[in-house]
Length: 239
Image (cartoon, rainbow, N blue to C red; front, side, top):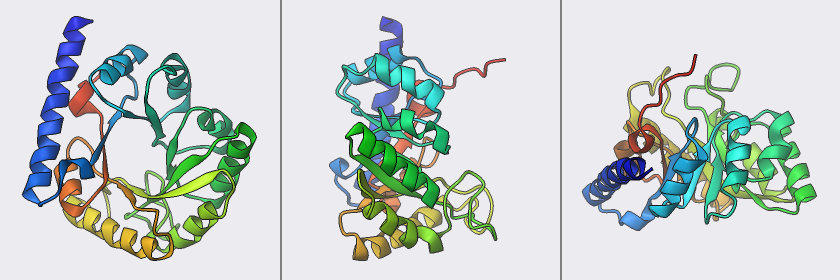
């Protein structure tokens, strides 16, 4: 366990240095950017180590992995973010532990989240997932709603009992006009955030950037970056 803690401490320090350097390069304060460590596929023991090292925000993208892990780590001072595509039949479970759902992209999901949040007596933060690669269907390859659909969903979240509209989330698209142009994609997100805050001033969270492109996200103005492999390493695929 000591070896693993040393490994994670070194990796975490490197990521912290990258974030700090990116903030300095663009004249931002380090405290303006929150690091969320994506712990998917990694065990609860790693989450405990990360907590010991000062991490306060962790993310998961599959409920079947997240639910038992969150339960095992319920004594830790952590905020849990759900970042994967969420099916409505998993909402009850996710609302049980997630402080923020970052992948809200359709009205049916908002309705389900509200119902379960009220039932559980919780307030759940919501980010509208934006698909900058959305085609004619209005949805992206990895979920998300087209920019034109943000306001309708945001208004629905803001008016739903048990939910709190926190802002926007995106993943740098692999196709479309922003493919390979991460900085431009994240700058577009900041413009969309500005538009959203005209109607919903408190929805000022912008979650963008991962291990490979966190510098571009920080440069654009993201408030949160989601980093997995740069902290935890590359886990061999099972099977």
